[in-house]
Amino acid sequence: MEVIICQDPAEVGLVSAAKVAKIAAAIGPSVVLGVATGSSPLATYENLRALVQAGKLDLSQASAFALDEYVGLPIEHPESYHATIDRTVTVPLGLDSQRVHVPDGDPAGLETAGERYEAAIKAAGGVDVQILGVGANGHIGFNEPTSSLSSRTRMKTLAPQTRVDNARFFGNSIDAVPRHCITQGLGTILAARHALLVATGANKIAAVRALVEGPVTSLCPASVLQLHRRATIVVDEEAASGLSLSDYYRTVFDNLPDWQRLDI
Ligand code: GLP
Image (tube, protein in one colour):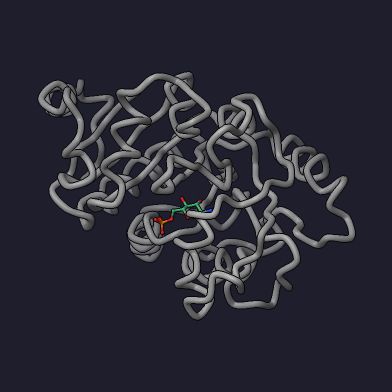
């Protein structure tokens, strides 16, 4: 696991976008991105948009797969993840919306929605780089604590804390936050060729410590990334403040061989 400690959230955005751009450049225009909602990756998307606009990154042939969606929220709802991904990723990065996929949260087809989504990822050749945020309780996607470490896309029930955290998007009404979701599983996320998790701020100190330096356990779903061959965690000073090996992570980053360096 590579841990990159940045000065502030702005630098987290810069560094994480440079990492995505490096991977995308190596793969070519038909790169398959895994994209996340939440506030954490917004600065990543903003920096990727700048690279696209500067002609340094071509995503016109790219595909994207979102991690998750609420169940029962119409896709036209501004807080549906269909709408959120469209607003924060598809439009700014100039992606072809036909190639942007979000799990189907329609209650009518829920029994098969997971398998259909897995088949779509497979048909696209798999995800090249999966961008992730992390919940304060260690969830990635909507894989709440005790999610199977080998799970695949399926319905989950949101943890009470997640509904509290996300009430801010629903007029501060916890009751307005859907109770169920459909999310890529931890096994699905592990199958991406690269995983890139971003986290900033004091609210993420415990989750970052647990996922980087704690045991691999379903109680902290993001700790499954310790099993990933190419996982990068980009955090700001604040979110990193609970880590015990920060000096080592900085030494590693400062001494990367040229071919591993980022264009920043
Ligand atoms: C939601 C999303 C996650 C995201 C998390 C953290 O629950 N399903 O993918 O990582 O929120 O959000 P934020 O980055 O706003 O803290």
